[in-house]
Image (cartoon, rainbow, N blue to C red; front, side, top):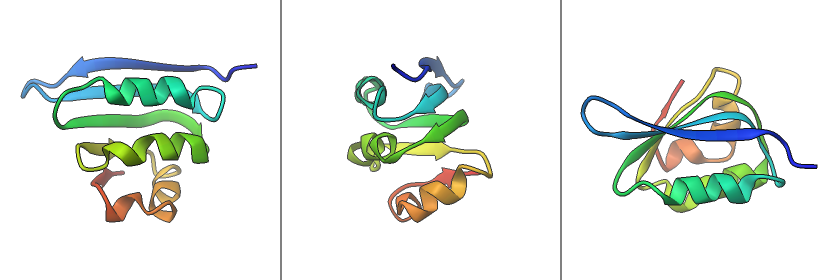
Length: 94
């Protein structure tokens, strides 16, 4: 059974693409998350503030794009991203 995840796209006034993920990101839907991450041209923001859970498959989907993305996370998710080493590779706003 697949875990519920939705990813939508928004534009900031400065033209920056923001991918907003809602739900849980795990091995059952990491391929859809990865496909959404591959879509934006140039630099973009990934808003994870409405993500309740992310596993290693979800984290792995982020790594190919660390040079082009910035992350927005909750105080609960921020340490997970830090332990995974994302704070050494990209900006994380908590």
